[in-house]
Amino acid sequence: MTATDPRHPAPGSRAPVTPGSSTPRRAPLGGRQGPEGSVLLGTISRMVTVTVDGREVRVPEGATILEALKREGTPAQADTPTLCWAPNMKPINACRVCMVEVEGSRVLVPSCARKIEDGMEVRTDTEKVRHSRRMVLELLASSVDMSQAGADVQRWMEEYGVDAARYGEPAPPSDDRDRRHAGHHEPVDGTVAANVAQPVKVDNDLYVRDYSRCILCYKCVKACGTDAQFTFAISAAGRGFDIRIATEFNAELPDSACVYCGNCIGVCPTGALKSVREHELRENGDWHPEQESVTTTICSFCGVGCNLELHVQRGQIVNVTSPADHSVTHGHLCIKGRFGFQHVQNLADR
Ligand code: SF4
Ligand code: SF4
Ligand code: FES
Image 1 (cartoon, rainbow, N blue to C red):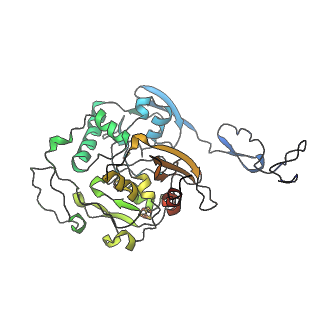
Image 2 (cartoon, rainbow, N blue to C red; image 1 turned 90 degrees about the vertical axis):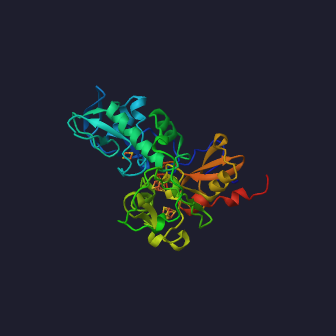
């Protein structure tokens, strides 16, 4: 260290004034700190008034009903179930589990996609709403393996009284879903519950596709496409109950356009897409989420500065994610950040 090292000024000397190194000043409400101490104003929005379950709340114009519920609602209203919605994605409006009643609307409306209007009256806890949410969750649970869905989804299924068993025994797994032709329907058996059970696709070293767990929320398609990655490696194929997520011409992943960013894994709500590491640990009975700790760090592969969340179980990194609200990644990563942790894992004990 020398006396001129700006990181270590000599005793009594003034600390150097470099952009970004001074104590940050608090940005005013609605704004954020810009370069050189300037203030960047946030978007100025008109506030509108809506009534939620009889209580008036004020939210910025342009917000969705769900955003209003999360921002101004009671804990129960903020806990509106969602499957195809994510805070870092545009509304997809596919699963219909987030439905609410709106005064004057003939049908229930999806809260994640419907924008609020001044004077709107929203009801979130009516018999009609609860029945609709239960039916959506129940039909999904009758045809899809939801056992690895997130904790919130499990809790919602419990709270809404989902009873998937009343649709009968599950039909046997199929190995021909990927070859079914759009528009060609076999008569249904009627004695067993139709489902999407099929073998897990393990065709590369990084992640598996377990479409027995796919609820067709389209999050992976959007993350691979216009919401994050712009690779468009996957899309929906088929029609009706035969619809499934597929690569072009149903190619194996190494022969597809996939760049292995894993952003589809990051948004999948049911465990249909997961890292090979997680898949193997689960298969071997070594998956211990109750012992998992998460450490946030910065990716060291390049200078972009992506925040990484290292999910660690029993001293081993088992997954890497990024916070949805991180200004650099918005929750999305590249192949290096998502999967490039083996060099850490392989270090000798220190
Ligand atoms: S890993 Fe990335 S490129 Fe490949 S399918 Fe998923 S989102 Fe698309
Ligand atoms: S694989 Fe996952 S993210 Fe993609 S549609 Fe199915 S459930 Fe949704
Ligand atoms: S969460 Fe609203 S439609 Fe899926």
